[in-house]
Image (tube, rainbow, N blue to C red; front, side, top):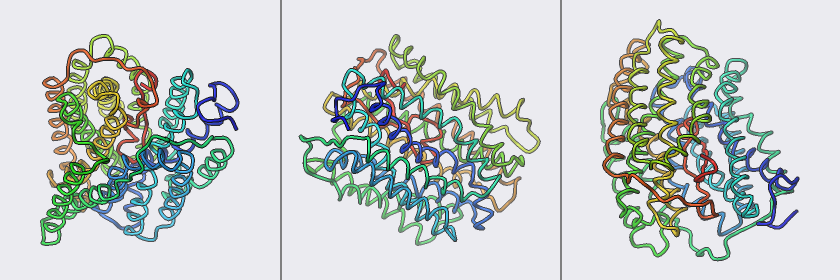
Length: 495
């Protein structure tokens, strides 16, 4: 096994490292892309309603969002390979429990455990590549990782739908077992250990606990209070707000905070993250509710519903690099302004999907417009985030942007159905009315994100070379962000 930092791209050692990181992160990624497709079947099998389905998604996102920044620092402190393997093993155990869950409560708890494990996997995969490869080959290794991961993302919804239709929704989780076992074996045998000798020996456990409690309390109030608030819902909401306040206080006073609040002193950084919040809130509502509408309202099978959104991934794979190159020439302001507007238009088109709609004439055009808007937005957004922070805060800035994307998905899944009165119990008709209203509201939110970008993003941004500090973990792949796993990008390589 070659020492960390010396492995060359294209050598057998380099191929093993890329394989281990792609396979390990792909386990979480594949799981995330197929869960949405399986939700209607899970609801029928476990006799759960809308709130149960919301928790199946948000149980994962609460722990992942809250622990993501912490997970990256654990690898720097205690060893990136060790932390990655622990994440793989924990994710596999949690996946097994998901696949065997006898009821909705057990599935939600196991999903929360998956999220905590993924908080180790998500930053760990690219941290391993960054530390393992020679600096001259690091960009090519990240590009290979991103491309191979994109292929997994493209086939994920189709494979997930096939597993649901051919066997059971439980296979969506149980398929992780053999894949993770191979990933663990390859990682232990072929990936060198590395850590950050200069890392501060401090883990922000109080901040992570406060963030988890805050997000969980708010999600509970939004989801369980959708049919009318009772005292428990109100207490949960108040507790969530208090916990978020405590988290901010902890981060302000900590010598080594998980989230340095001074990064928000940059107008562009704050604006870019507000745009992220808006865009990924729209993405969250689309990928959650469109799949429900296609299966419950239009009678699609799971594999048909998964395949129907495939053009989004293909557009992202084909056009994101070009959008990034365009942003390098003209700056991110224009694409970040127009992109959310195009996404919003795509959401308006999606709102027209109803019983009797045809795929080619009604669903496909909306999906293509939506995917085009995402492809226009995500690469310039990454550039804007990185350009808004100094070199010392590159990793933190990108991690914050990732966490904001997760929180956006969490809030959209928890809050939008309550705001529009969506109710599965009323049958396809009630779902259709709530779906239309949710898509229209999401379109307004995305348009607001474009307005924020116009007001806050500079026309030109500095371009940064790929370094270990700029190997980041933002969630800039549609299926990954909402379903619970991640893609990662770096300026100029993974875009």
